[in-house]
Image (cartoon, rainbow, N blue to C red; front, top):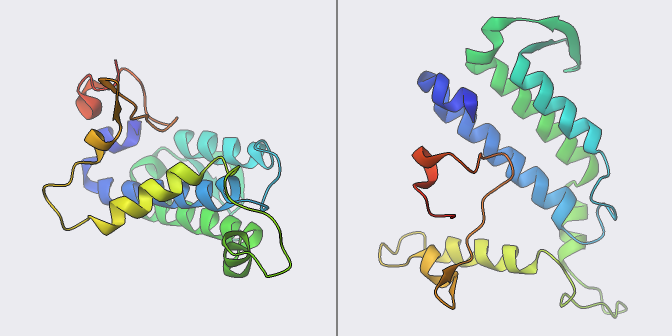
Amino acid sequence: MDKYFKYPKIRSTIVETIKIVEVLNFRVYCLPRIFFRTDTKRSFMYAVAYNTYYGYSFNEKLEFEDEINEKNEYSKEYYLKIQEKLIRFIEKYCPERKFVQALTLDSDEIENYYGWASLNFFLAKYEQHLHKNDPKWDFETILMKDGKNKLTKEHFLAIENEEVFGGRFR
């Protein structure tokens, strides 16, 4: 997010990268039966975040090298490479076949989705998708309970970021 505010010319590419991070998070950490532990491959995610922030270069295999290039942090091509690296991770650990398997039950399976920790998130995103063309629909009012806003923010956004949140989370 620091780069988003620092380099307005590449904001759309940074937003696309963040969307891929959200997809990755949902597909490998939120779907049932993909990763059974929430810290699986955490070092990969930390490495991508750290190396991206500091602008470490890539080799041909999209592996980070031990070389920082300050031009990377404001290069659209750099973020496209990061996107490709994240997409490869998704395809490796949760390809479409596993995605479908995680969301469907076969006739011989006796599981249900009541215990699925990400069910509310899944349903909220689906509801948001259904109402994307309805200007009267307000996602935040649905999250009001007992006069308190239950809206939460993602971990990669700073709590103090008034420019984005405008005090909605206090």
